Amino acid sequence: MVIPAIIADVEEVEVVVAHHERATLRVGDVFLKIDADQTRTDVEVEAMAMAPIPTPEVLWRKPPVLALAALPGTALGRLGEPSTASSAAWAAAGAAARMLHDAPLPPWPGRSLDEIASHLDGECEWLVTNGILPADLVTRNRQVAEAALRPWTPVFTHGDLQITHMFVDVDEITGVIDWSEASQGDALFDLATLTLGHEEHLGDVVAGYGTDVDLDVIRAWWSLRSLLAVRWLVEHGFDPSSPGCEVDVLRSRL
Image 1 (cartoon, rainbow, N blue to C red):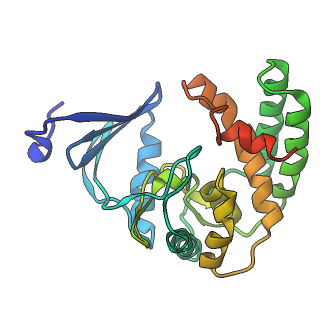
Image 2: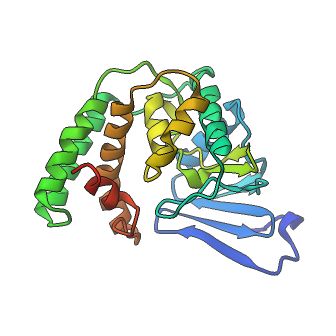
């Protein structure tokens, strides 16, 4: 593979994330995303072109590599760590989410309610059968998650709106990265993903979002997303039991 000269003469290559499905490298001011599934990259490129909020510039694409320009600013925070971002920055994140959700729908659908419920039941069974989590912890969070399993009006969702994917400079959003999960979906899932493990900033996000939301449904999505994430994290070399991460989110529901 010939790498364009735009990333020549760099002094350091940083591995941002790497597992058997995909890897992201930072080479100077360029991010190289390498994905085994090019349909995810297709979605990412099309979603960024449609999104009404700032996204990284696509520099070039030579499958399986997508080159993106680095965004200015820093991530809103990290799961398991206190966020140093201001309340105004969190509110700006909520406002950006609202702008996305008000945009025209992407042409491809997201997961159906039945698909999500079936996946959730399968993951809960796996967690208990394999002794990954205590049965009472799984059962309680499965009960909490039920509130998210209701009909919703589809909106343009990012699908993985983690705080590490939202970049800010002082109190302004400079861009949102990692759009491969974008689809039609539930607006409250995005808000829940954004505030997972950072419940103290939920009020700021909702204030920036600018409309009434059902907080119980957001909390239900916290449980549901965490239950679905544990197996994937374990199998890809991450630790969901790190302080402040998914297992702690589940424990907070007891």
